[in-house]
Image: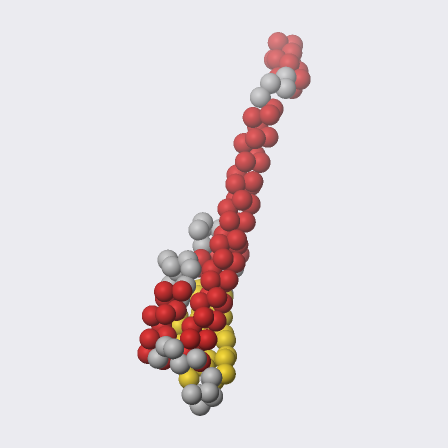
Length: 133
């Protein structure tokens, strides 16, 4: 009994390896936090790319530099990053151009963490008046 009791007391007082245990506990949480930050940053980059490409495309159509049929190709050329799947729609009325682009939030994920926290779409909807002919 004393021998077992002494061994337990020595084990309880021994602090060797305590840093390793803390490292093993905290490292996955820190890695998951970093991956979530990277996912959100990439989502913001995609959102900025949607707005920039939409604005450039709407302006080109409004100035009559690009036909409505060629607008999707111009958007694809201007869109950055290029590996994101999007839904593009354009409507040209008498005096205005309306462009709407949507991307599923899951399609912007670099890791498996973002789809667990964000379910929805990001997009750009832009209206621009047509220039006089």
